[in-house]
Image 1 (cartoon, rainbow, N blue to C red):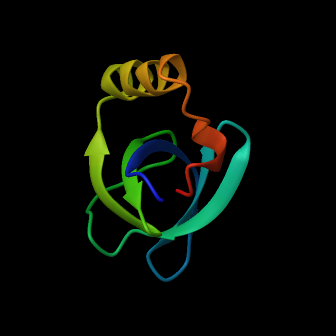
Image 2: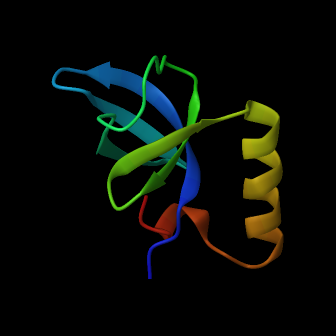
Length: 78
């Protein structure tokens, strides 16, 4: 099962793609569905696509809740 989870953009790539990091796991995703994303932004990612930008405080809160619930965010397939 894949979850839509907050991930941090660490690098912008050509062709509307970005490298994101989630707990040390890095993956290339598509930014085709969102506008004006910058390095350091948090985005909600599902099946390889950023769906929306997320406030950094909300991202931290969501990730903390997922960890508290026992979800290994590094393997939740961003």
